[in-house]
Image (cartoon, rainbow, N blue to C red; front, side, top):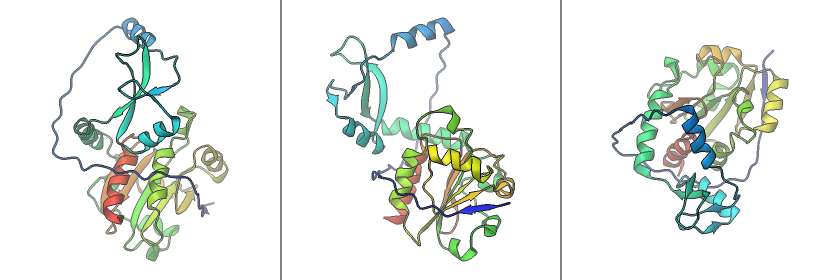
Length: 255
């Protein structure tokens, strides 16, 4: 049996602004070390202080930490600051050049295996017509989120929070369709979504026909199209750059 659930999820969101990466070059290095040496380094980096600091050594308010991380302009790290003898949680500005280089690499290496979902191709929307009226998709931006609860088992945090913040900001009626698709039956899907909700305009559950038609192999795949359904961004897995890339493209198309 096929299940279709219409869900409207209201979450607090933070407006985030992406940057346009320019031309990039990449350079990689390889470091080899023994497991015992790596364990020693990780042991030395253990942080007992629960506070977060800026690079000047000032304690940051928790609300400020969250706002900075949601902005895509800052990133967390564990490092030593000159003001303290031990390691601290530090929030620092993102190096946009390095970020663009890494995005370029990951956008290539994490491309979906199915030729139907590659960046730059036109999304074939016909398989979706069993669940969504064809006219509803015409001239609309489409976000497809093929998901599996296998990813949720890896962490206790809400793995969709940052992407939800972006989708909630740009979920404009008549402009975008956000379809959250899974092969899981309704009961199993509901349990996973209670822990990790997904902002959407429609949930499509028990959709093994769709995962087969698009060749996702029941893996996590996320993609975004323009109103002509050209795929602008598509990756396998839970890539850290996905919320930022969605924000960048949605901001261009909807603002």
